[in-house]
Image (cartoon, chains in turn brown, cyan):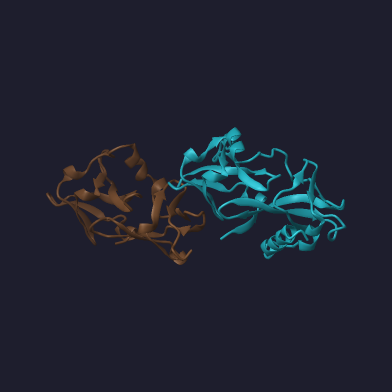
Length: 149
Length: 189
């Protein structure tokens, strides 16, 4: 599953079949190399985060949750920032740990079950395996040098 | 693997943590010119209020010097400028503009850049000079290899006369010229 495929998809509450909002931002934990939460748009109030572990399914047409109570505000300032525009991988400079720019993030392939990042797509510059991710900051996504570099 | 680069190419290069934050830019390269070593970088801030910073980045805290960024673990890599002296004697004199003289008294030109070989250490392997007539067409940019250590006064750099046999016009092949020159010096020839 890719970020661009899921962006804008509905998050639906299985309790009452109501739409809670739309998938807007991805909260990535670079240490876990995984998406750990989603931030929704078109939500009333501050409770617009969904922890990955609270998802019922990350489906092809909708994200489903078992109850509206799963929606919560940002856990802390760190999560708020992780969901901000400056920490989104798409559009971000991708820099090797040895200081070479590899390209810009065009898309991210994740495992729909675990949220693990399988690969970062750099468009014409190729792809970087998710297990090479070292850090994610406002300036760049830092990745380990490829074995062949 | 080591690469050759010009010191002026490093100015303005972003200093980036492994956490992906750009925390500074290289302001100047700090050398121990007499011993031919790069010992660190002075810094300036980034963003709208980019000012010179009081701290510096010693070479031994650099995790990688890349084409697009100087990589560090985190901001703990920065130290007060005076602690750079632990790495060598910071040369506050700007070698740019210095005259290059051979030990036999020939004026070769004026220093316009410093050539660094970057690998596990970072060493000054040569100077780029605007040539005097004794070396090449006047004003032409020529690379002169250096011995391991040199005499430097803030006015003059003294190089062995044999250096003129190993000059190059660009960085390609200059590494080999430096090696050949130093081998010749060590053989006493």
